[in-house]
Amino acid sequence: MTTHLLSAVSVAALIAMTACVAPERIEEESSADINVCADPTHEGACDYLGFDGLQSAVDAAPPGAVISMQSGSYAPGSYRDVPFQDLAVRGALVIDGKDLTLRASPGAVLQGRKEFPVSAIVVRDSDVTISGLAISDFFYGEPEDDIYDGHGIFTIDSQVSLQGVRISGIEKMAVTGREAGHVSASELIIENSHLGIWLEETAHFQMKNSRIVGSESAGVAAYGDATARVVESLIDSNQDDGLYTENRAQIATMRSAILNNSPFGARAADESTIVVCESEISGNEDDTGVEGEGVVLIDAVEECQF
Image (cartoon, rainbow, N blue to C red):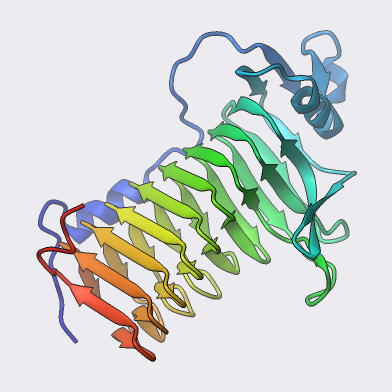
């Protein structure tokens, strides 16, 4: 196995940097258009109250609105089924055909529970920014049925920006990109979930200064013609490959660390490609693996020009 040292950021510095990311930190912006409080006793202090109030705020939001979630736990007690292909995505919070920002104050958490199997957020045909939010403990009901529950953020044909979002304890996929959507993430933390990033069709995902740690399956998995770019991030201790591609999908990494994954740090199947540039790939059960005509390239000059 070959080790490639980070050219710009040492592994120790990268781990320290990502470990101390404050997911609740958000950029300074003007006052929100709509305020939501988690605690129903705060009547009068906010425009909407509780999780149902959060959904009502989304539904009422005009184009470009900013929804400010105040601190507290938002626990869903209702859901909407969003049709998708021959299935349905069961979403606690559904953002459909909207252009808005969901800005969470420190301590604002979407908190799932075992007895209420849903996906946390479903975004369809929308342009959405989500900042500072924590999403924790969402579960599925049946492992194999026609309902997609147990996901974190499930995006369909949408433009989504995640800033300082932290996701943990998700029983299926933490972040999903489907159809022709584009998901970008900075300071994203995904921990102890089933799978980190799941991409299909022609979805594109890019993340920077983020980490995906301790997934039961892959850290980043791309299928179909999906693409992903991973920059200055940590992919660590995932149990079904750090990076995985299938079909014609492509993943490229730059100045990142791919550490302690099994069975492979990076594995490409079918006609897919993974490019690892100026990164450390070490401590994995095997650093690279290929199936069919899959290709894993390490520091290939032409392919690393991105």
